[in-house]
Length: 184
Image (cartoon, rainbow, N blue to C red; front, side, top):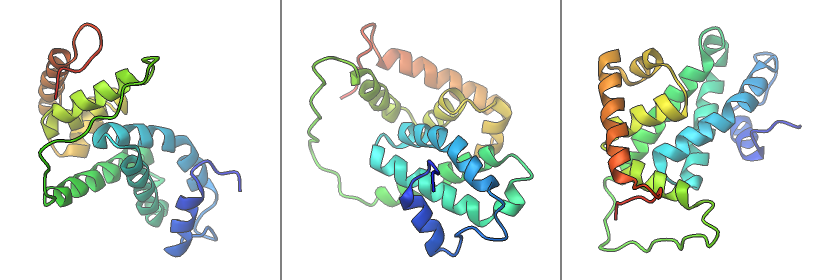
């Protein structure tokens, strides 16, 4: 099929009765190929877990496909990011009911130091309050405009600006000069 959004997503679309056909002129597949890398990156930064990020991005694409004829006339990527964010927040609410353990084993740092920066950034992002983390990720990693982030989160542009400023300031404080997170 050649579509970059994966067989798992195509299978989920088919199971939901969305296997192409008269309602899809191929524009969704083009959109999904173009949007998936940014959705995965945004989801990974929001969740801090690659498997959850992939599931969240796929779920967002499935939910957008269901309403694709209506969405494609507007801003489909902003809408898809909103669906993704809502899904991640729902997961956070569900996870709050989990039992916390006293100590979590850290994964070993890579010897060459290549991906250690990413782990530290994700750890630092997870230490931010939820609103600041959402704003920083959507504004600076998903590269959405202040207006788009404000609409997505249902807040004013001023709230986006102040949350972004505070979030970036806290990130700077959490990450030292060597690029290592100072969070436990």
